[in-house]
Image (cartoon, rainbow, N blue to C red; front, top):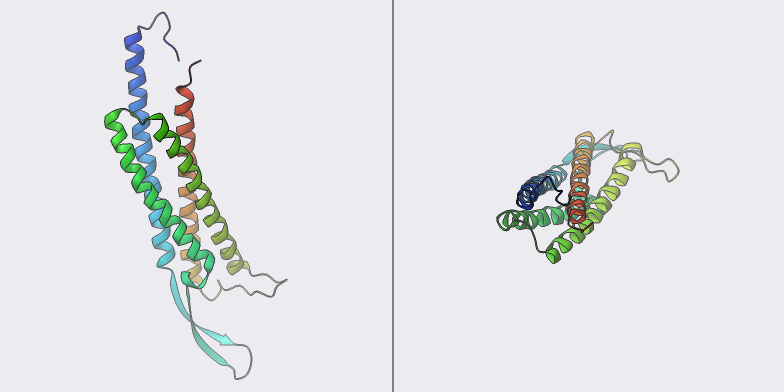
Length: 193
């Protein structure tokens, strides 16, 4: 939006500064939501543990005590590691965003690095979401072709924790998409027309 003849250059600069300030506040809020979402997903996944008596289908018949927890599945371990990384990243970038509020923005180089790192964090979060979602789906439905039986009929609370963590991580991935779109839009506004 270049200044028009009806708007003085000083007024245009003031409007631009207000827009930048609102955008920086939006970024801080989105980064806090990213931290909240990733932390919640990790906590829900880690606290999902259930012990049940599982019947043995072959002699000697009986049942055995079995525990289901996130450490039993490499996909869930990756999920926790990936979302922990995203949470740590969100703490660092929230601090950078708050410091940018006082300086009215980032340097161009830092803004580019943050956008690129946001994209990498989105890829990490999406990969974690996909792997955990795939394993959770097999736990819920099973796979008759490979004779993997479903486990969510036995470990229902554990499956509910896993599903909740996966849903919250989906929210965190959406927040990352919004952060990337906001950064790209801000860069677009800085391109002279």
